[in-house]
Amino acid sequence: EQSTASAPFSAIAEVIGRLAIDLSREDMNEKGHDRLRKVVSKIRESDLIGPGRKGNLISRATFTTLAPLLDHADDTTLRGKSEDGSNSTMHHSMNAIKECTHEILSVICETLDYPLVLFLDDLQWGDGASIEMLSFLLSST
Image (cartoon, helix red, strand yellow):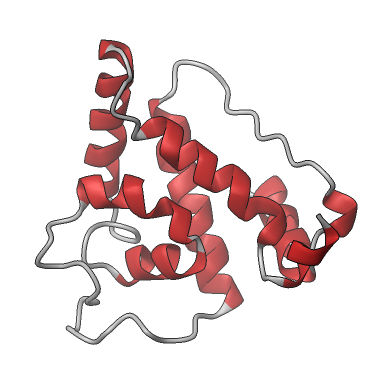
């Protein structure tokens, strides 16, 4: 709806959240569990979005719906703290948010046996941050 478009990244937050929920569902088959293990392993290995990394905190703060997926990779002692031990209540640059989003989508795509297709409905109501993010993601390799 148009009323939700005022929130930054509203045009893509729902689709990213659904992707995270689908990847971390409890009722999935063995192939789904294997895919989740691969995604979790890749997240843990990431220098950008791994547990305790600043990018993990940025991803959580920007897309709260990623929490279920990121929680699988996080040690509970690290949640909410950055590498330097500071709390995650900070404002993040657009470049940092774009890089973290690109990383999480790349990690997910690396583990899939098929291309990832994201359907974004009502993009005409998309906010500026979402359009900028999509432009970045579509031009990234």
